[in-house]
Length: 306
Figure 1 (spheres, rainbow, N blue to C red):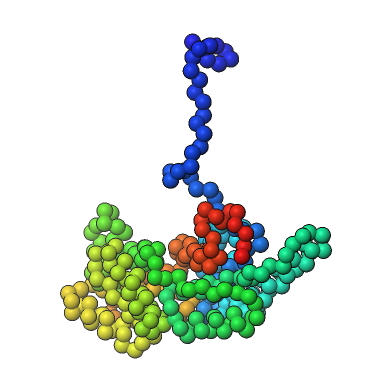
Figure 2: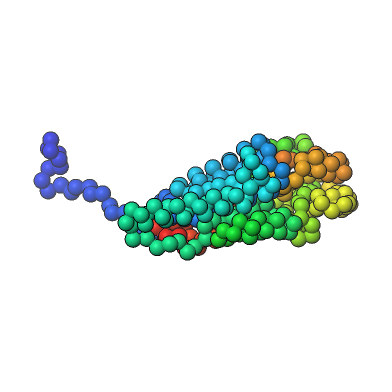
């Protein structure tokens, strides 16, 4: 029997159990290491307000995944209103040097940082040797200690993003359980990439993952190779596909939108939107950053920058 002040004498008292580590325990929230290098998103293509909006959304997603992240945007063809990649890197280096001098002037016992000032992540779904060469050149010309990562794909999250874009356009079922009867669902997908043969091969890996999701054939083609789109469309129709769809394996800024429209006409089929600022893009950009710094998720809160 209980008393006003608690259980009666002799009765068991329920005590809170101590939290035990284990696979079901909620992971600790990630926080960017103190004085970590900046993540600089290298944006290809002609700068525009639409491109800036897309890039800002991508870095916003990355910041939401890793609070405290210093994320910046550098445009490969930037100038004036749209800061160039080289100028963004130079500014990051100046700010880092200024922080060090301020700390030293305040009498703090600090060592001059010897790691990279920034980690440059190309805003590209697949390899494009011409664009990557220009990004690498811009990093070298900045004379800043920066590390350049690989492109974002291939990756299962990009297959998911492609699936979502196709379903948004009414060209694929949202999943195998819902919306099973989509009259306009494609029975063959052309995965359109840029960057030549290397890009087509890389897109083909993500294409296999997309084919497994949709249970329809998926073939990669190059937007920048004459006849590639038409040839793949012919192969798909020759193998029995009647309703084709074009899925851009692109984020958006790296190519003129008119080329996608032309490719869809060439293939004689509708097209989905480019990947754009799909949440997976920001997450993959952050993954490239943390991998470059050797930061595992469980270490991110307490690991110092290299």
